Length: 582
Picture 1 (cartoon, helix red, strand yellow):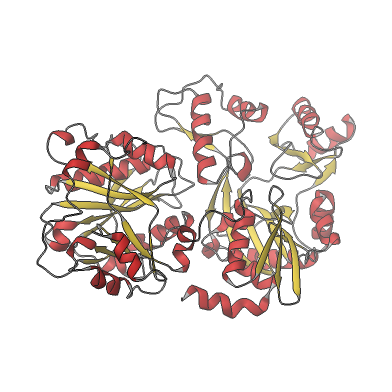
Picture 2 (tube, rainbow, N blue to C red):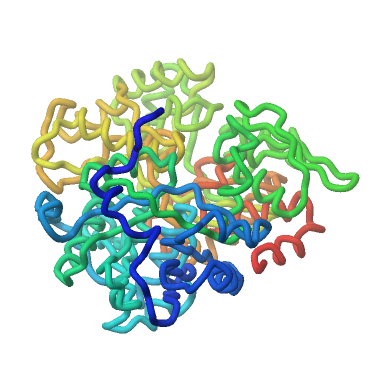
């Protein structure tokens, strides 16, 4: 027989199959994202089943410490399922708690109690992590003696635009129901995928544990998906040990992935999968044609549309060719009155010198290509430009030089000639710890970016990265001082480690109008425009590229995928609206 994965000491002492008798009312705690039902406080399984049936719309209720989960599920098998998560416990009192690490000192960022004005930031982080955000007004309604605590990590130094970079919710079981076992639990731990700091999730966990320890709570429990290997490794490192406690949840659209079985579309990347999932929610048939290529076909009634991620058969070959060749993109947009950088094809030395005389700082890139391959940004001097041209020719026969336009990199997604999302894109950065060399910092940050984007974003350790580091007077062996940030790429492309920050609500009306006009000039129904803007709140801009296959998954929580499926199957818009309120 296989070894028991549960901690032997906790296994022996655990009393949740025979919980301490509870004589009060059933404990049902509003956590914002749904209700936490403490199963040991319910008189019998039918009472718990009835309570779970009262789940609100767009909420995710969790029944934990269920004494007989198999019996509860059997009473309502079409309504309930056993959550495929493990429960882990951290002792907060006694000899087992003596090794609990204390939160490390933080420089430039902090952990504090959440405030009502943090609601939007918390919702953004949770949605980007595929989690349910708190309902409107939840934080404002929390009182000082509430059993629910919400903590946030705030980093105004490295994330001035969106300083809240992490969140965690804690529940005090004693405050909730006078729990005689003196327990507490951790929920909804999430860190912004764009966060540059290392250890934010760990710090939030330890801070919450320390606060409950100070209150005299005996343990801190948490529930984690059985296949979340990285999170489990982190929790076990802190001192959490697995215990035989189980959760029961409702079958609803939010939980669908947890009870329908393994992925049906193995191999699809996140950009294709997110569209397939939305289509199926609307009753649209989705057939995977080539998983590795992100190709699928959506069908409903007599209509069938082939797609490769967000590129569909609705995009004409003409429109695609305009986006594919950056020379054509510029000429068509410029002829329509859209501001674009000055541009030439790489030619002889005389041509290069004339262009550099007009524009001492340039961008060198293949005329055709994507994902930042072969692009060198902010190059000066003939020798450096010629080296960049040689590099670009490895990715395409024709190379162009473009006037370098300083400012923020802004991606605007337009669907059906209407702006749906806008986000700034920032080049890959690392933050020093005073000990590790840049090679190590880049490798670590690259792993974090890959984990946050399902493998889509990594920082290459290549000549371009070395060039950017050298421009700062450093090498890969240099040690960056603690807390100091360094951009290690010039391009803000996601695939080379860049980060994306939603600014849809801040987008200037003039830029919105330009993007919509540009989509009509290119005659393209779905497109992502790359703007350079000196001031996000201003009207100045330059359009540098148009992407005919923008990554819609990068712009959650904006409804890019919903609008894409609306475009393909407009008759399903009512179905989509019903699904969000089911």
